[in-house]
Image (cartoon, rainbow, N blue to C red; front, side, top):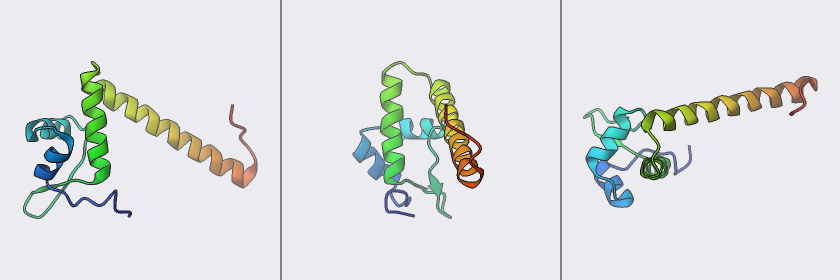
Length: 100
């Protein structure tokens, strides 16, 4: 795991870095747009990758996107990445697929 993915920052620091309120950040978590880790004491911990994601979500919402649209687009991108990965592995192993 690289430093960008380590979940070490508290919600207060994330608020300072993003300009978002704690309420907004918790709402994005509630809507399944961000996934902080929790300590044993239930404190949320965020990574630099989470901060980038929060800023991206906030910008999309400002542009008129809805939370379910953001989740759906992310799901589609993830599915396409998975498909491309499988095709690449099959092609490397068997020379079966050619990308269209």
